[in-house]
Each structure stands twice: as C-alpha cells, then as structure tokens.
Length: 248
Length: 115
Image (tube, helix red, strand yellow):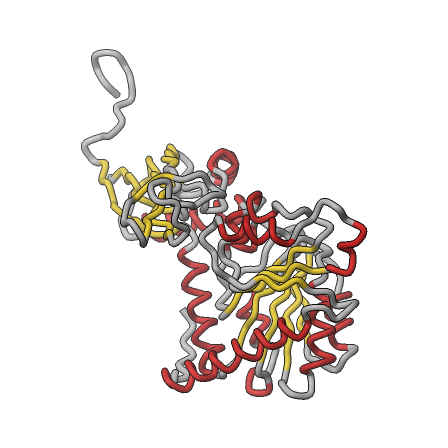
C-alpha cells in the first residue's frame, strides 16, 4: 500500500509481467490439429456442416447417403443439445453415426470430436460428416480438425445472414442456399443478395442454390464434394502422413 | 453464448502459466479482442468475474483491449480499418482483401505477484 495516500499501487516490486501472446482457445487449436493429423493419416475427408437449426443439414446428409452411399464409405458425427434423433435417421440408412449431446453447450469442440472419432473405425470411412450444433455464432469459433466448412443458409432465414453473422460465413468453403423449392412463396429472399453479402467478406467460396426436395443443385453439390475428396486424397498421398497418434 | 467455455479455456491457460512461477499469484490478465473473434468482451468480463473465484486468478484484474477489424488489400497494398460485414478496400474498392487484425481473442500477458 502507498504510504502517502493509502492507494494500492498497480504493481508491487515483486510483480512480474509475463508476455504470453497466445490464442485463448489455443488448447482447442492443438486438439484440432491433432484430429486433422489423425484424419489425414486415415485418408478421411472431414466436412463440418454448419447452419441455423432447421436449415436442412440432416435431410442433406440423407440425400448424400442415397446418392453417394454406394460409391463412398460414409460416416457421420451428429451434434445436438439433446436427443439421438438425427443419428437414428442416419443409422436407418446403414451408415455409422455417433451422436454427441452437448446438454446446454452451443457448439462442438475438437476434444468432443476426438472422442467421437475413436468410436468410429476410420479405416472403413472415406468421408466423415460432422453435423455441428444448429447455431450461426459459436460453432465457427471452434476448429474441429475438418478439411472443409460447408454452411447451409435456408431461404426462409433471410438473405442478409452473411452480413449479420460474418464470423460464421467468413469461414465457408462452400455455401449451400437450401430449400430453394420454397422460393416461389418468398418474395424477399434473393440468392444474389446472399452471395453479395458473402463476397463482402472477401470470401470467394462457391454458392450453390439447392433443394433436397426437388433435387435442384444436388448435382453441383455432389460434384463439389467428390472434387474435394479427390483433392484431399491427393494431398494425403503427397504428404504421406505418418500415423503418429500422440495424445497431448 | 459460448463465453463461459472461452472463459474456462482462459482460466486453464492462466493456471498452467502461473504454475511455472511457484508461489505466484495472478494480479493482472490482459487480453486483446477483435470484432471477428466471435467472443463478446462484455459477456467475457462477466464470465471471468463469475468463474475466477477459488481459482489462481481470484484476485486478478481483467483488462480487455478491443481492437478494430483491419484488412490488407492485395491489389493496392493499403491497410485499412473496415466494418465487420464489408471488407471492401476503402482505398481501391477491391475485394481481394485479407484480415490482418481483429479476428482473434489473444492472451497478451499476465502480471504475477511473486512471493
């Protein structure tokens, strides 16, 4: 304490300042890097699906299973606050699905994915979909170790969502504008406007309007997915990652 | 609202760092935040006040410096501050821009009282 006025000095003689300069979420980033190495060593393409609740992530996955399920070995990690409903829908199609229930947490993180990955046999999977918690804010902040972020924006949500949620939409590797079969009933959603909002985030990711119900855009989406898988496999074979499974 | 998860990660990291200074007591935590970190400074302050009790940071004063979003233009090579949802270069209107600041929550430094 200062003898003149009794105030508490900001620093005592024994105070040491330690420079850190590291991301607050660095532990998650390390865990995500570990997952990425693990997935790469098994040649598994991991796709992180993110959107608002109800944008059609699970319906999209069902459609992917119906069309590519015989060509590629698929696996799914489902994230929801509660229920096993989505995993049951995927398993009903004969695809392995691990359900993560986060309780009240609004996002998946890399350690949750790590645990779920170990419940799957990665040697029998080519493409692993991670269906994140329906939420346009928090999931974007947590790297999971995925190769690609695919974001769904359904036409009932409003075409200015990328401007309202830039933290999410800036990380999109692909934007799927979903439920386009409803566009005739909505006079206030313009795909161009959604795309413009995305471009203002300096994001050049492809934008595919899509309807699982009508089939519109499904060909473009599946083509993107197959190209991504082939590019990923090529990069895996070039780097020839050793399977050094060290847990930090 | 994931500020409590972020707060937990922060306090874990602080605990790990202070453990390298035996008998040390954290008196100051300095963070740098930006609008694209996805973490709200006000909510994080509340979360830290709530969570720090009975941890190594119980007496720590938290300071968060909010920095603006800044970009570098790959066409005209100017650096500028921009609004959170329009990263068009204010100098040449290019969209070939790259975020160079304001997209992370960083633990800058700690102040530790030594015995």
